[in-house]
Image 1 (tube, helix red, strand yellow):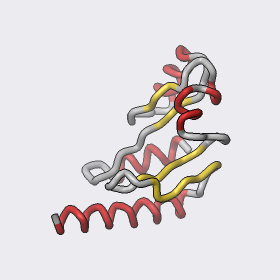
Image 2: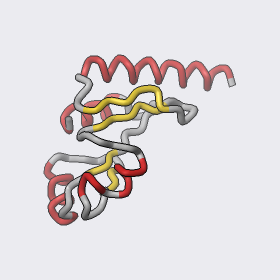
Image 3: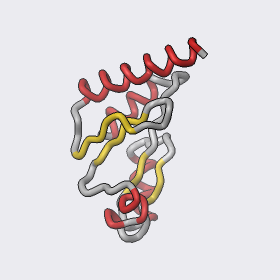
Length: 108
């Protein structure tokens, strides 16, 4: 999903959007190389040497990779996907959440 994530970060720059990643690679040194190679410029947290059994995935009850959460401007989880939701579906849901965030900001 890295190419699609890169396009989201670029396309939505300056909007009320943030992409956060959690990486389950056990080897932190290899992870750094992968992040550079894949041009991951967004904040990405390491799940620790336990890999998929690390503390972040445990706390968020992640049971499959990739898992994606879409969280709205109020911090409410609106969608959770295990596996890739597909670019078109994801983009549509993100656009809907951004529209709601912009409307709420304008009304404030």
